Amino acid sequence: MAFNELIKNFDNIRQLMRDFYVFGFKSRADFADKSARSYDNERRRIESWLGEYMYFRQNAGGKNCFISVDSRKIRHNPFYKALKAKSFTANDIMLHFFLLDILQPGEKFTLRQLMERLDAAYLSCFDEPVALDISTVRKKLAEYAELGLIENEKCGRELYYERSRDEVDLEAWREAVSFFAETNQIGVVGSFIEDKFAAGSSVFSYKHHYLLHALESDVLLDLLAAMEHKQCVRIESCSSRGKNISFRVLPLKIYVSTQSGRRYVMCWFFKAHRIIFCRLDNLERVLEAKPVHDYDKFCAMAEQMEQHLWGVSMNRVPAADALEHVELVVRISSDEPYILQCLEREKRCGRVEKTDAEHYRFIADVHDAGEMLPWLRTFIGRIEGFSCSNKAVEEKFWQDLAEVYAMYGVEKAGEA
Image (cartoon, rainbow, N blue to C red; front, side):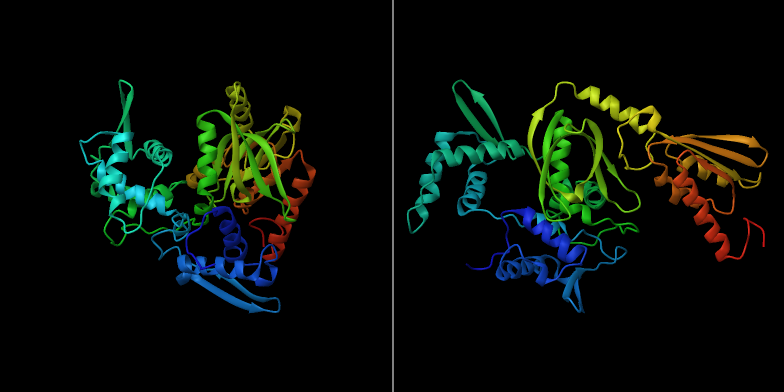
C-alpha cells in the first residue's frame, strides 16, 4: 500500500508521538504492537509535519528520536499540523467544492434541486460516470449545517439549504486569533482560522509556550462538551503496562498547571464513589456521553472540596477528618511588604494571621500537605516554625531544611 501523509485514526499517531518523540524514551526496537513497516510509515508522517524540530541520540539500546524546540523562537505550535492531517474520501472533497459552488450567497436549494444541479453541471463533466447517492449528499449537508458552513430552513414540506453569511472581517481579528491559537486550551481552533491569513510573522513570542497540550485537543473538547450538557462519559486510557482500561466518570472541571502546562480533569468516579483527577495526556478517548440529572449536586461537592485543594492530589474519600492541618510561621520585616504580598497572592487556600510586628502565621487545612512542600520551601531563610498533622510531611520538611542549612554551612537561617 502506498504511503499516505493523511491519517484516519489520530489515537494511534498521538500515542506514538508521545512515546517516541515527545518523551523520547523509546526506540524502534520497542515498537512491538505492529510491523516495522507500520512504524516506518508513522515515522515518515511525523517527519513530514515536524521534520525541522526532530533530533536523535544514539545509545546502547538503539537510536532514540525526540523533538526539540526553543519556545522563545517558535511562534506557532507545530503539533497542530498533526490535527490537520485527517484523511478524506474522493466524495468528501468533491462534495465540499461542488456544494459550496452551487450554494452561492443569497441562493437557496432543496436537496432534490441540489441533486439535479450536481448531476447536470458537475458529475456529467467527468470522462467516466460518477454517481452520488442522495443519502450521501443529505449526510454531507447535515454535517455542514452542524459545523455552521451552511444553514437550513423549512418552508412547507421542503427543507432549503443556503450558504451561511460570512460578515466577519477576519483581518481585524488577526492578532487576537494568533494569541488565542497559542494560549487557549483549544487553540487549534484559532490555528485553523490562522491558515486563512496570508503568511506573515506573528507579533507575539512566548516565554512559557506549552506545546504538548495540542495532542489532547480532541479529548479536551469532548470533556468540555460533556460538562456543558451535564453528561457523564466513559474514558479510555492505557496503563503503564500497556493495558487498555476504561471507566465511567462525570467530568466537573478542567485544571491547568501554570508550571508545566499539564492538564487534568476533576471528575466523579462512579465505581469508587469519589472525586478523582485524571491527566488528559493519559486519556485516549471520551465515549458514550449520557445525561446526569443530579449534575449540580456533584458540582457542589467539587466546590466544597476545592476550598481545601492545593494541587490535584486526592487519594482519599473527601471527609472533614481527612484534612491535614498546616501552620507556617515566617519572619517579615516592616520594610519588606512584598514578602507579605507574595504570601497572600500565592496561597491557594488557607489564611494569613499577623502574630507580632515581624511575624506572620499561615494556616491551612488541605487534602494533601505534601503538595505544599515546593511552595513552602520558597520561604527558606524566613521560616521560624512549621507544623503539620501529617508527621511524615513535617519530618520531610525539616529534613530538607537541615540539608539546605548544611549545604551553606549554617545552623539556622541567618546564623553562620
